[in-house]
Image (cartoon, rainbow, N blue to C red; front, side):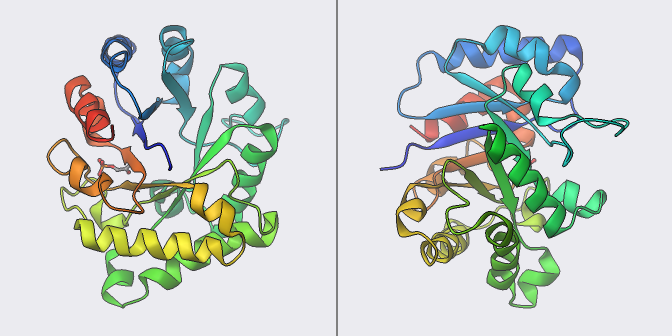
Length: 250
Ligand code: 13P
């Protein structure tokens, strides 16, 4: 069986003070958790403060993005080696905010995925459809296209030691959650799509749901057969709410 993973994506929120308070609370509360993996993804500039507290505990740390390049003249970017240097075990790639607000194409996301994979860090690879795409009946087509970009560059075993996050764009930060049935149906599709390439990896890969997951809806969502945890935005910024979602994953 797959162990659920609950990961907090803090996005561009918090101050140095509030982030320290948040990670201290999460680490303290996570001590009593069993049977669920926990991770937080702070803004880059706070990663060092967060790993100073979370290092050696059962709370892992991840970055929210990574540069496609390994080093050099890329002003403002952060390389995978730098992320690794600060003790991160995960790196989010292809979040819909990166795709829509910063123009990251499927190919750019696939490049980022490769860079993370090759470094031994676990990619949290985000996919998902917009409202228009859902209403147009092409949710599965969109998810398949986003996944296939990674298969094209990384081959059939691409998703070994990786995490996938299905985040319907219309559910992110809107308070509108996909129903457990809607989410399960897409998660099952994603797993089947991966199984066409490698059935063993498809069975193992954790597929997280993201999009307005909170303490009230987490248990039912994570209870679905193919939902292996959550990628949490807003609710990960409050210690109690985040820990309640983690508990729902137990
Ligand atoms: P919300 O939980 O705020 O909807 O954000 C989800 C998300 O984008 C996590 O990456």
